View (cartoon, rainbow, N blue to C red):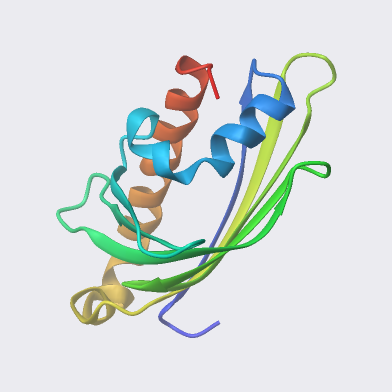
Length: 148
C-alpha cells in the first residue's frame, strides 16, 4: 500500500429486509436524502454520476462514480471512483438471521486531491475518523429512512 492509498471495510446492520437495503444502496441519486455526507449527486452519463462528499473535516471530495456491478439477486454492488479519490467501493447485502440485514462494504482508494495528498502522512488517522463518521451517518440514515 502506498502512502496515498487507504482501505476501509465495515458492516451495517439494519432492521430492513435485505432487498430494501440493496435497493437503497443501488439508488445513488437519492443518497443525499438520507446520507448526510453526500452533499450532492448529479447524473453525468447513462450510468455515471458526479458526487460531492463531505463529513466532519473541512473539505469536500468531488468524485465520478461509475457502477460496475449491480446484481440484485446476489445483492452485490461494485463501483469505480475517479476524482479527488480514485479506486473502488463494493457492497454486499445479506440476511441477518431474520433480524433484518447486514451490509458489508470494502473501499480501496488512492487520494488524488493535491491538498489532501500533502497532508496524508500526518492526517491519515483523521481521514479514517472522517470516513468512519460519514459511514455511521449513512447507517443511521438508512435505518431511519426505511423506504427504498
